[in-house]
Image: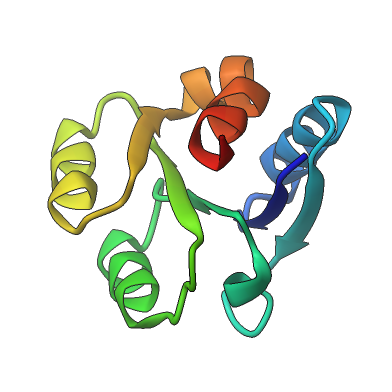
Length: 111
């Protein structure tokens, strides 16, 4: 079981992610802003479908401890994936893959 902090402003998709990760046995906290909860996480799940520059800057400035990062983006925005990977995020996947395989992806990172 991984401790997950999910920064997903889209509440509908966020609740879907929380549900699927919880069903996979992970402890999930959905947040509207990254902050004090992040250093206690094993995995940070971050929505990069909007405000990409701001989100990448916030992640870079965050004391993450040992937390790994799993980000998702709109499949048509391939440059977002490239920018996130260049910024050092551990795993960057399309939103559809996050919806299908979120629990396994978190498990892989927390492993």
